[in-house]
Length: 452
Image (cartoon, rainbow, N blue to C red; front, side, top):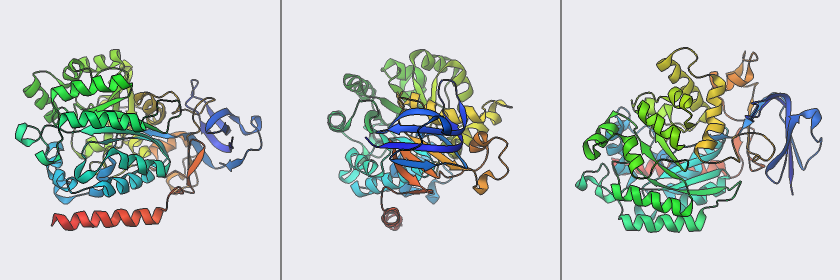
């Protein structure tokens, strides 16, 4: 079984139960699992691969809890740049409807490459439209090539414009067909084991694009297989108004009534949760994917993260789709989370270490995993390292750990997933990087051409 030794880190941030930060830190892993963590002097001096991390801060791999990877083909579309959520969606639906399997594979490859090069080792993806023969299989194939841990969620839209929904009718699917395909991808790809590289979840897109029956049936199906459940909830005031008008209750009550609360559920955004809904999520163990950059970009508001954390809600960070964030950088997300909470609540509403915890342990908990998010014996050898000689950290020797959040944001120097090096010297090494970028650019240019 191959062994890995990472040694001489200026600081190794464990996120273990004691939240230790180890100077001259090191870890030793075997077959992708950490066996020892401590100072360089305390650990073995040899391994099949030894990586010297002098001058670096080493952290647990960052965990991204919400994304729409296909959207990186439609960044900064002019007509959508200044729109709020509903108008933004209506502008982009017709473009997304021209995509197919190759678009899904190319965008997943580039999106996960971008995440990996910024220190992310596990990512969720919410793929909820399948035009022109696209399947969830396409994104899983691409993720396997990159080598990140991947939570692929089989999304869906079933209520089109003709029935009062938001998406065009051409992009919605028959509900029976949706449920059949959910069963297929779970049975084909889902790995429930510890240290799984691929897990599959069930993810109706939102209360304004699927029926009450599909929400209920999706929850029952997911629980029959023991897989996670994901959707958008309470993203902005329009979202809440839609829920009140169509269902007569706020989003939290709607979710609860249809079985969408519990430790196997994590909702994206939750910007407009009220105190009662926060209490519901805390009692039920329901997780939240906080996406501050996207929430700012779309003018959705500031999520009550401080209140959620105080109540005991599991909160992770998500970069959200690359057409509503236009970036896939987890440390940038942590920085914005910190700054937004301070704008909304004042003072030290969120500290740098709390923000980093949201990006690691918090994300692991939201995804229902206890094998990632920390550097400790028995945890996955998922590791990120950041070079303190980068100009972004100049003068930050006072507190290198806080610098990861306050400064930059910097790219990762090294990213290791399951004991395997995915990013080395800041560049993804598991795929042909230049070829992938060239193909992605060609697909984006074709979409632009067809839009004129």
